[in-house]
Image (cartoon, rainbow, N blue to C red; front, side):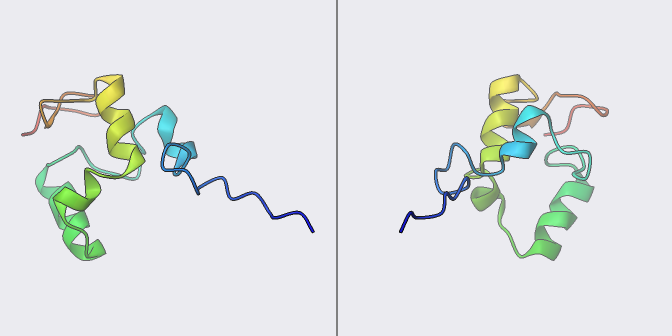
Length: 77
């Protein structure tokens, strides 16, 4: 029997829908609102930095030197 394909199995494919842009549901990276979101989610900033959505934001230039420079407002760091 063929095994089902898990598109999120490979870390580069996980969160693939979020890969195209910073999700509108997230506030700017490291803003007070973003940090509150992490706290409510029970996630640390270090863990968030391991997620594909963070890596894609870095690749796109939305996050530079761990500071928010991408769309949706002012630079946060």
